Length: 97
Image (cartoon, rainbow, N blue to C red):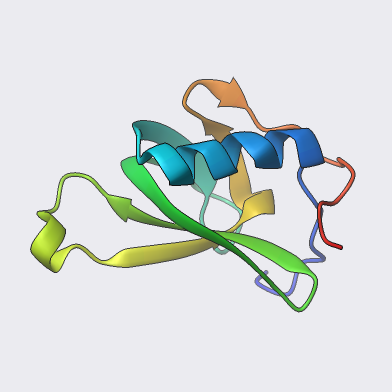
């Protein structure tokens, strides 16, 4: 189900994601796997946000790995369920300009 149409997250919530990327705060997230049928829970640091082809993505690293060999993971923002205990609003107004 990887070809599912992108649903933007709320633009105001996007500001929270930018703050997490800036502060490098360790947070917990829950998100759906690529088939949208399994919930994944991870403790992470948000590294960056990007927009590609009208879709918004978060790039993060798991904190259980050492910084030297940690793998960056990229997920589409509409797969997020909650981040740092805050439910992710769906059907928001996109921040894409």
